[in-house]
Image (cartoon, rainbow, N blue to C red; front, side, top):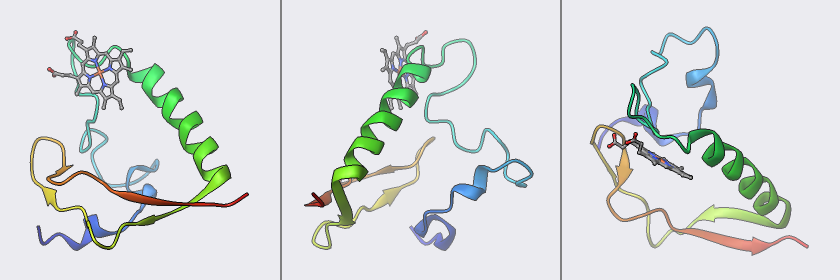
Length: 88
Ligand code: HEM
């Protein structure tokens, strides 16, 4: 997909005051049947990411670059493959 703005990590896209609609990214869906595990999943992810980044430096696997496919939410067609290098 040729969408250069998607090619960089830019958390400010959803910062307060951003002109992007707050529902432009809906990983947990929305409305009355959205994900009941959202709060748990967000907390679990923060803990998992923090503990991982304490111990490893992550880089993309150059041999398996994610290929984005347009769906209701963006998903890579081929998964996201990371390489972990132990820090401690
Ligand atoms: C990163 C983690 C997660 C993501 C991205 C995610 C995403 C979603 C999405 C998009 C839906 C709506 C599906 C639809 O519209 O048909 C959904 C529903 C649901 N999720 Fe999650 N989810 C996550 C984690 C969890 C966890 C940890 C739990 C439980 C502990 C959970 C329990 C559920 C349940 C029970 C529903 C169905 C709700 C209903 O139909 O009323 N999810 N999830």
